[in-house]
Amino acid sequence: MNPLAALLLRDMRIAVRVGGGALIGVLFFLVVVSVTPFAVGPDLALLKRIGPAILWLAALLASLLALDRLFASDHEDGSLDLILTGRAPLELVVAAKGIAHWLTTALPLVVAAPLIALLLDLDGSAEAGLVLTLLVGTPALTFIGLIGAAIAVTLRRGGLLLAIIVLPLTVPVLIFGVAAANAAVAGPVPFGTPFTVLCALTLASLVIGPFAAAAALRLDME
Amino acid sequence: MRLTAVDLACRRGGRDVFSGVSFNVGAGELLAITGRNGAGKSSLLRIVAGLIRPVGGRLWLEAGDPELSIAEQVHYLGHQDPVKPSLSVLENLQFWAAFFAGGAIKVHDALESVGLGAIATLPAGYLSAGQRRRLSIARLIAVKRPIWLLDEPTSTLDAAAQQRVAEFMRSHLNEGGLVLAATHSALGLSNIQELSLDQKNPSPLVGEGLGGGWAGSVAATTQSLHLFTSTPDPSPHGGGELS
Image 1 (tube, each protein chain N blue to C red):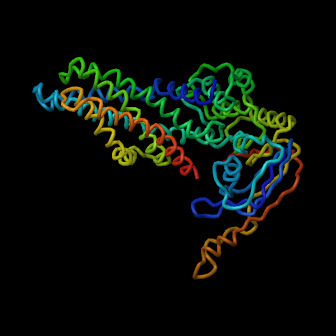
Image 2: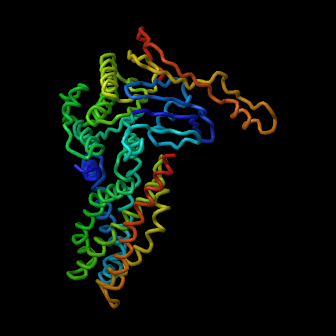
Image 3: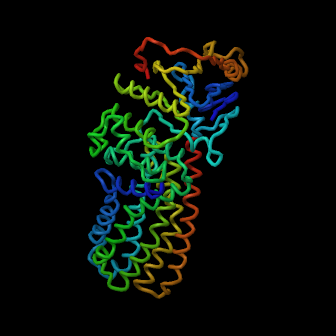
C-alpha cells in the first residue's frame, strides 16, 4: 500500500473507533443548530433568514473541535518523529491527514445538514444550495485549520490558541459561504457569484494549508 | 557503508549539550553511546535521524543509497513507542510497515519473532510497557533499513526479551547493517565502539567572571571524546534502572 494511503486509512480508523472523536463534530453541529430555535423563538421567517448563518457558524466551530489533536497525538507518542524519517514528503503527509480529518469529521456534518435544515424551515432548492456550500467550504476550514494545528502541536493545551490562530483566517470562507447559502435561500444575489469565490478560497487553502503546516511542523521539531 | 561524523555540536534550549563529537561507524559495527543523564545521547541520535539540526560539524554516509537522505535510511527507536491504543497490535505494525516500505509486507513473522504473534488482534491499548516496546522493535524487523538508531532499546524489557534484542542486533550487524545505540547496559555484543559523551570536567555552576560569565562557562564545557574499541563486558550488570 502507498504510504499516504496507509496514513489516510490509519487516521480514519483511529477516528471512527472508541475515543476517536469522529462523531463529536457532527453531534455538536446538531446540538447547536437544534437549540437555536429555542433561543430565537418560533418565528419561522426569522429562522429562515438567519438559518444559513447558524448552520455555517455551527459548522465552523464543529470543525475546530477535534483539530487540536490532529498532530498533537502523533507528536506525543513519537509517531511524528517516525513520519519525518519516512520517504513520503511532509507536505503530502499533512495533506493526507487533512483529508482523513475532513472525511471523518466534516463529511458527516455535510450529510446531516439536510436533516437539520428542516428545523430552520429551509426547503428543497435552498437546502440543496446550503448543503453544496458546506460541501465545498468545509475543506477550506479543515485545511486552514491544519496550519493552526501544526503551530500548536508542541503545546499541552493548544485548543484555545488554535481557535485564536485559525478563526481570523476562516473569516473569508465564512463570509462567502454564508453569502452563497443566503443567495440560495432568499436571493436576490445570484448563487454563482459568492459560490465561485468560495470555490476559489477552498482551492487556495488546499494548496497553501499543507505547505504552511509542514513548514510549521519542521520548525516545531527543532 | 560507513557513517562518519566530525565535530558535531548540539545546542538545545540555548544550552550547549555537546560539541566536538566525532565518530566513524562502518558496516557491521555497533557504536555504543554512553554518558550520564543529559549528556546528549538522545540528541545525538536525533541529529543522525535528521530530527534536530546540529549547530556545527558534519555528518555523511558513504556507500549508502545516493537517492535517499540519511534520515530516510534509518530506523529510529526513540523513548516513546508510537503505538495507537485503538488499533490492534497487527494494525499498528501493518501501518508502519506500509508507511516505510510502501508495499505489502508480511508482518506476521515480525510479530512472531518478538513474541506478540498470539495477541495480534488485541487492541494495543491493553499492552504493557514492555509489550509496546516489543511492538516498536518488530518494526525494525518487518522493514529493512541499514542504520538502526536505538535509544535505550532494552529499558522496559525483561531478561529474555533483552537477549532477543541482542540477537536481532547481531543478525542486523552480520547482514552489514550499522547500529548506534544509546545504552546503559552491556548488550553482550562484540565489535563495539564506545562513544562517551561525558565531559572530563563537570560543568561549573557559576561563571568564572562577573561579566559574560555564562558565555565563558558554556565554552568551558567542551566535551572530551573517547573513541575506542572495547571488548564486551562479560558481567551482565542490570543497567537500565535509571533510564
